[in-house]
Length: 396
Image 1: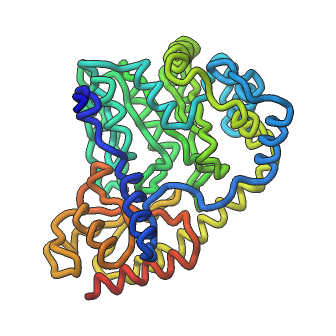
Image 2: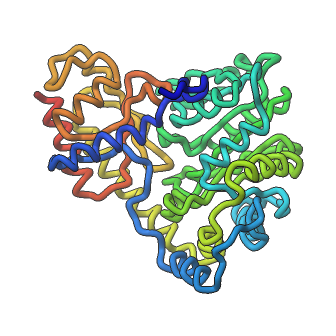
């Protein structure tokens, strides 16, 4: 038997991908599963983006590219930030990677290491803490609650900072809660950052998917000098239904982006040449596809929340961004439920899958016990039937 390294032995698999794998096993056995586990738009990539990829292949753009991405795609990202956020960058401040997760990993590898601390408000996306631990740094979790709208306060951040604190990871709109910080709330966080020596990793992957009065905010633009302390991560997966294309990027100070590019050159050489041409079409092309998808997600949010409201004991903050509902299931702990006993969120989700064939992700995976995450990036029928099945199961 080949012995595992300390890193391999310590890293846990992604809880969201593990939940999806369980659902696939049941489906393969002939069971109809109502799968709400994966954070992936169920729409096809828009045709004009696919056409750009086909044209790129026919033109022979199938070779290695510069590590940081071809000049055209970096210019497209720069133009997009100026157009949507008034944020002025140069192409040298942009690194294109194999998905936003890769961008997060590059950022952490370039900024923290053993002995350092990374401040992360909870609930947080499942991979944050694992990616931090992989660098040898320590994740410092700042616990938020439904009472605060699952938002970290400036006072909480200030209390979490120690001489070892190097980085703050913040995500708005947030996975798993769907919560979006207001501009004023982020300004208050930014003021605490500027009092300290912290660098900020701002994960803005869901920035084009906000609803109602909620508006996305580019953290780096909030205060003078903040752009020199912020690495902004985003990508095409959520807004353009391009999850499989693996197109993410990081934008920040030139020196750190260059260092991240050096790391990437040893990891993956470069991002996909074909996907880069597709990304150019996504960013520079018509944006009605984004507006249409956002409108559909808003409607599905209302459908999912309306059905959850009918289930006794279920509470949640109404999502203002992304496509998740993070709801409290703790009222059902210790009760007689088919597939039980249920005493924590992992057991609740396992029982929901086994007994009701409803696939959710346990809150403990996001650093918040007592909750479950539902993705409404699926069809109306799946939402209606799945949440009806969930309600029937919990009613006994």
